[in-house]
Image 1: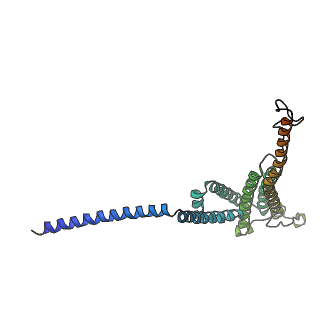
Image 2: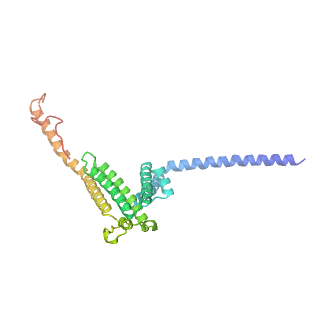
Image 3: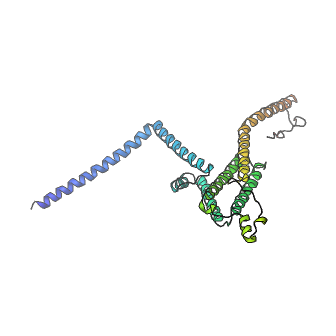
Length: 268
């Protein structure tokens, strides 16, 4: 019978092929490891390119949040994997927008819609002023908090503008129109001026945030220079004290009058 012999040879051939593939895989892995070890510059360049790509994507997502744009599911997933802190911030903004959208749809008149927006902007304005005027918050942290508030402002205003462009909003009456229906007397109709779709409250809080952010950035940029300038007088005072101690014959128990060691401080 020839079949068992052929089958046996075929089995041996397949086994040999499998061993050969494993050997090639090991050789390839070893070669790649050796190549990476022998060429660290190439590996570093690849890592730098990946970091630049990641930074560019994150910057683009952050710009969308600053402009009040909604993030896609893919962008949210990318943040969750690569920047959990910004992901949580974006998630909070998304939830806040959804809650605001629901509140808008409950409004019965255009006036209610505008009051809802005005009250929300006044809340952000108070928060922004509290942060901007708090001297105990470091400039870097102050800038981060103000940027977060600004993203929330832009997100809510974007949601507001989207709603005011719908037929649902266009069909809402004005309060004086409702009053007219109740009184059924045109002569008693109160005259109310129509408000802009972009209330002054939004403009006020946006301008304040942008100004506060600019001031925080300027303060953060000038802080290193001020610290450097303060270091020179401190060094000179230390040298003077050392000199005074030496001139007193060894300097045991002798220090500069009115300037004990450790008492020099610089207020920035």
